Figure (cartoon, helix red, strand yellow):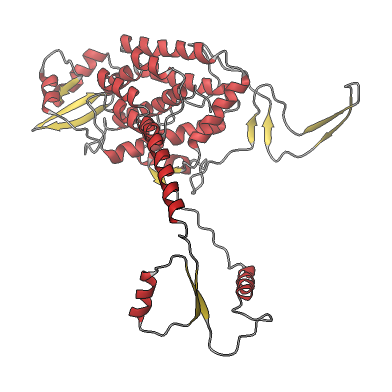
Length: 437
């Protein structure tokens, strides 16, 4: 397990979260029913009325003029909220600026880039919930669950399609480039994102291929058994109904690799003596040029860019994958195995002939006082059909059992502190986020 995986997971999941929030806030710009409403408080309403627009909130009748004068016609979405009898509009730039400012704060990044094991889904979801609530926007638990599922499945698909482990850095750069575009009107927050991008380059550029492969393997373990169906992926036919992705057999090969389909045979001196081809089952092409790993430049790789720009909210619904139920007929060997077991226990004759006389059986008592079974037989009223009862003494040595129980209790007491440390994993990041908020 790599101890440098957490920054990549946090940056890429955070980028996907910002994509979705921007798409939903932009969609609410044309929504008439105001279905995507946050939780609005009285203090937030007073912020909007305090003049000079400190919170980016305007009364509905002033929104057209204020947006044109304050933001120069830049495209901003809005979130319709109600407080009393008035309607207010929250711009994308304000909400996303607050979230990004908390996400890429220096104190938080210093803690994040320390070598540490990857957090669990539960802990990461709690961190992302705190980030989403860093602004005046609030999400109910059901919306946050769906948001986290979309984030994880989008990043999982990007890791699956990543040509090389090194290209994970290009995916992260694509997310950071898009985040810089979202907060380009806020210089202070923009500087925080650029500083994080410089730290990303300093940390991962010198990694050897083996360390990058270990990092990718840690990500795959993190995504293991996480199969959530996304309507957008299902519609694009890149995801199966069971929640697993469809990996194509076409396209360019990773940089530094040859197009499959050719076998070269060499002699002892390393000279090529023969060639033969074989069908690959796909249409592979030569590798494309390598993208830029600097702060700015052409990434070439499109993984990690915003896929929600032209997507309706209905196409980003998620649902749990159905449990796999294998429909198969009965095993023909099962009956023979049961018959063999019966013959070994003496209740069935060889040759599958029924034993003459009434059918008998037996019962095993593992403990000396089996009161529950005796009471059940008495309440039933039917005559027992058992031919005999076999008593097995399973609690013979009482002193040895008590001594073992005492030793087990000592191990339990020693393990309690480590369990507490495990439960508090990630609390430092959450405490930092509380201080920043």
